[in-house]
Amino acid sequence: MDFNEIAKICYDFYDKNILVKSKPTNSEWTNLAAILATLDSKNFRVLSIATGSKCLSEKQLPLDGSFVHDSHAEILARRCFLRYVYNEMHQVTKSENYQSGDASIIPKSSGEKRRLKEDTNSVKRIKTEDDEEDIHRTGAKCVPNGLIQDTKEKGVSYHTTGVVRTKPGRGDPTISMSCSDKIAKWLILGIQGSLLSNLLAKPIYLSAIVIGKCPFSNECIERALINRSKAFTCKNSDYKLTIPVIGQSNLYFKESKLVKLPEYADSEVNSDLKACPNSVCWSYGLIDKPLFVLVKGFLQGASVKNLKKNSNFPPICKYYFYSRFEQIFSKLNSESSIRKCYSEAKQIACEYNEAKEEFFKIYSDWIRTNQEKYYKFVLKYIKTF
Image 1 (tube, rainbow, N blue to C red):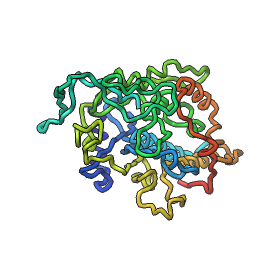
Image 2 (cartoon, one colour; image 1 turned 135 degrees about the vertical axis):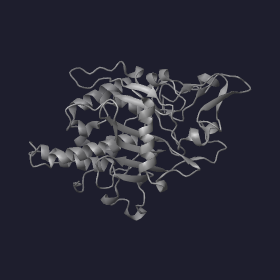
Image 3 (cartoon, helix red, strand yellow; image 1 turned 90 degrees about the vertical axis):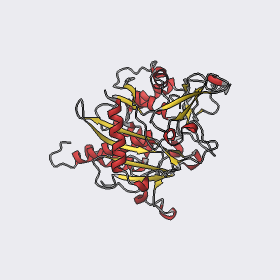
Image 4 (cartoon, rainbow, N blue to C red; image 1 turned 60 degrees about the horizontal axis):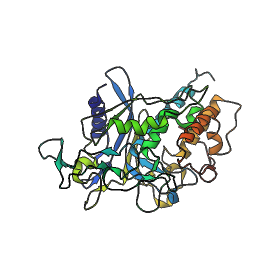
């Protein structure tokens, strides 16, 4: 597998299809993630692509699933992919012929720090005065009140590895788990989630994970995404630990923090470079708004007065996915009535939920969403495609 070719496809797509006004300014950085389909051994198709590095605090969570909580690029790319899948299912069912935080803790080279060379795209390492071993630190925090916490000792002992973490952020804390933890979950439960598990014959797994040019350790990636999950077992189930091909490209994403200001790639201290507040989202095969921009989980351009109008809900939020699920599920099951609320719809997938409970036995410190509070919303109408 050519990791550079896959990264280039994503970067070229971003350059050609994302409007300049939606991209970071010169004083902003962002991350990018995409999900691709393999057409054959040499050809790929971008099914979803997204940018972003923001996450809302628990206090900002909607009670009606009306906007997006986690706007990190990896999470948005998955949600944009789910939008594509729902659309594909709708196209099938409307036919008249239809029959009813840990992976980023990577050792640094001894006593070195990064500096971008002016004449190349490579990263140069230079000696520091104290010549002390260190690690690339993550802003993701060990879960509050967890049994294991970071030691925050000097050098390589600063972090405790192999534990679940919540996303970093200023101000009020978030309950969103780190992207490393969520990807580890996808490698067991699939990326389709509970609602789509009712409509698919089998889980959808990632066959490969390609990481752009950045501090990278295959050992650390395997520790975070795979090794912690090896104890998972779920008898008589399609759910299992599925190990993808993992590799790194030598190509940089030009909007990354590392490229724009490499000496501050681990920190924004003393830097005017800030994380871009916008997130670009795109899904393949959509006629209506295939591309849109999120700001603080809402659609860009939606006025504060109209945020709670269904027409202004992002097309990848829980409410929209729930409405799409009900439309398709009801057509597949003509005798089925609409579920009373979102949490009830999620509980239909018995096998998925059984596997998820087994997953949480391994990741026991995982902060689980309060379903009574956040998953009891109902549909005011069924969203049509």
